[in-house]
Length: 234
Image 1: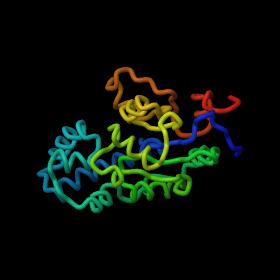
Image 2: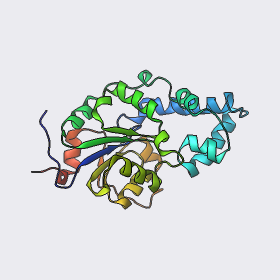
Image 3: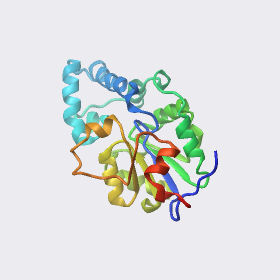
């Protein structure tokens, strides 16, 4: 593979994890969701899975992250590490090496690259290991780092920019959730929607928002076609 050069001023590639660096349709998200409801019943003593689902949806719409929904929205107290370990399980049951993403990441040796996820860092790194991408990033920012905020809140983006020492107007952000891209674009990021189940579920919720580019998966060929102005000599 040959090294690619990005346009002047572009210095960073920022990636969501779930649904971006692997397709969310592979069953992993569905299994994680099942484990959330199991955790609510077994550990938090919610009376049934059906009630857990109703409670989860009511609060997730407000808090945008299950951990915050349970703790801040519903007032439950529990061990965070036990929670994350339970709901994420073994990613190797669903994920596999993503060679297209690996090729793209290695095509930009001069760029800084980070993962920005609402998942906890430990579990995010476990997923990256299975995907064969762990060593390709300069840092992983997740739920432990963000604390009481998460995507799509502006404060979460600002915290990551400050810690990673990056500027939005020189950063390309890859994400499968439109609501997260809305915040990013308002801040000056170049936004790339990785089209899939999440974007379809959010259709009509974000006022006709248009990302700078849309791709079906993280790969060099689609990125060059969708955002040719990003590349020197394009």
